[in-house]
Structure formats: C-alpha cells, structure tokens
Length: 342
Image 1 (cartoon, rainbow, N blue to C red):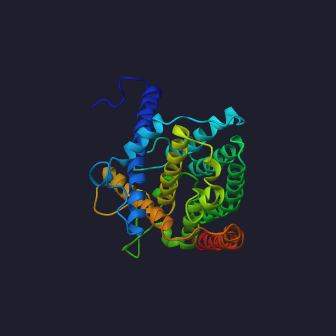
Image 2: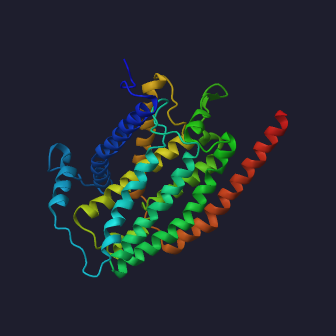
Image 3: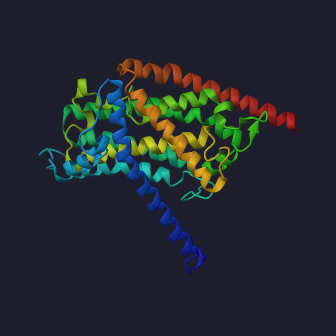
C-alpha cells in the first residue's frame, strides 16, 4: 500500500502529521466525557452514594446531557469585563495540553512530531497554562476571581521549579531532551527481571514529579485557585456556557497530557511485556496513563485541601531542597560512572 498518497515526501509528511494530530485530538476529546463520568462515579462511591445513575444506563449519558446543557446555556459576560482577555483565557486553558500531546511518543511508531527538545516544549506549555487562569481571574473584574488567579500564579512558581528539578536526573541519565530518546533509553531489564524504567533509578524524582503534577493541574489537595469554600469558584466564577466548559475540559486535558509526560519520563513509555511492540506499545502506554488518571481521581476524593501556608511550605521547604539534592546525587553518580567506564 502506498502510504505517501502519491505526494512528494514533504507533502506526505505534512498529511500524515495532520492525520495523527486529528486522531490524537479526537481521541482525547472522546476520552474527556468518560473521565468526567468516572470522576463522578468515584466521588459517589467514596462518599457512599451511587453517583450519576439516571441519564442512560449507569449514568453513562450524563456527560452528554451536561454538554447539551452548556451549549444551550446563556453566555453571560460581566459589563465591566475585559472582553478580549475574557474570551482568550478559556482558549489558553485548552490549547497548551493539545500542543504537549503532539510531542508525546504514544507508541514506537506513533508520535506526531519528534523534536529534540520535547521536554522543553512541555515546560513551556505548562508555563503558558497558568496565564489562562490568571487572565480569567483578572478579566472578569471580580475580586474572588482575581484572588484565584493570583493564587494560581504563586502556586505555579512554587511547584514548577520543583517539577523542573525533578526531571534533571532523567536528563542526566539519557543525555537528551527528546521524549522519544528518553523512552528508548528505558528499554531492557535490570537484573534480568525488573523493567529498566527510570522510576527505579529516580524514585525521589518520580515522587516529586507526581506531587508537582497534582499542583500544576490545580487538582486536590492543591485546588486553592478555585477553593469553593473561600472563593466561590475562584478564577472561573464569572464564566458560563461553553467558556466554562472549556476550562472544565482544559483541566482534564491537562491531566491527560501531564500523565503522558510522567509515563514517558518514569514509567517506560510504550515498553511492556507480552504484547507486540507496534500496537502493543500503544496499549501499554494507554494503560499506564489510565492508572495515573485513576490516581488523580482517588487523590481528589481522599485528601483534604491544604491550607495556603502548607502549600507554600511543601513547595519551597520540602520539594525544592529534595529535588536539588536528588539532582546533585544523580550528577555525582553519572560522573563517577562515566569516569569508571573510561
């Protein structure tokens, strides 16, 4: 079969990139309603109630009903709001997650674009995501929204530094910023039976990354930017209709994107036993990401929300020194190994 569509190489590459991008975005958008339904079911069972069980069998059509409600709901904008930024903020909440997904190697032959600085693309987009929350809080001209936006910016500064330091060990072990190269470096086994995943080489970095990815996505116990008990709804208090839905979808899309990055960095990416590497790699990757999504859900409905001083203390006094020490120890170990090999 001619996979070039009879086009010159540069045009066939462009067509295949477009097809993979559309498949990726369509897959994520198709998973989002399932995640929303799953979160409500998990919340229900944790709190000894059934969760959605009226619209469709087991409440499976509840996300569809919610979408229809939001589509036909009146789109209200405060009279004193900044109209341009008020409209731009929901877009910024959704787009960075899809950009990150384009550099994630989902399988050995499925990555939209393999850039040699894929990890930097992830950090750039995660930094851009906080602008959505900050702009939303400011543009609505609401004091509660502004407080939520300020909280989010302070939280991002506190935890993104620790997140960056937590992956330094992986970069030192692989010598590359390409997520494809990082996944390939995790092929093989340790001692003949243990997968050569970086979670076993970098357990401290992995734990720090897991904590910071909860904070980066504003998930409980780090959901202070939208603390309902204090700030009503925080940064999106003035949003309704599809703009509110964009924030809602953006949160779950960011959860998927950062779980994909965690899988590629620490959990071996597409590597796994028994299944053929081509399509089996995609199965293993999706399974690992799904486990991380379930972890997100159970953490939200298990742990209480942190106080703001506890949030800052954890970021600056615990995670930052811990990740710095981990990076230093890893650098020394790599230097000793390189010197020994010479």
